[in-house]
Image (cartoon, rainbow, N blue to C red; front, top):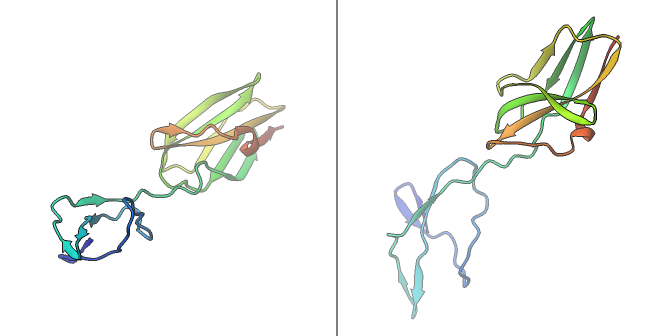
Length: 149
């Protein structure tokens, strides 16, 4: 049963002890209850109803840099926002390790660094923190190279 507009409405019948609700909208609350049919009679006690709220499905868990700009001893990285991101960070690869360069609020989808030493190519990556966790997967595959001449 599903509670819709002040009325309990049948949702589905099944012979199993589990049921998967499909087609629900992420973030929307749904009040549902399980009722039983014994000896041909429905027992419509909904006192054990629960409210379910589907989570947002995150399709991209890390930012993809879509623009790199270099001017003199400065660079700017830009990316599209990642759904559910709480923070972003920029890291660089040096001496065989990824090292944090900076982290900031998720409202920012670009990063500018000035006074970068010239004559080098830097390997950089943008990361996102979602649900309190930083995604550190495939850093090398999603990194970009920035050359300061």
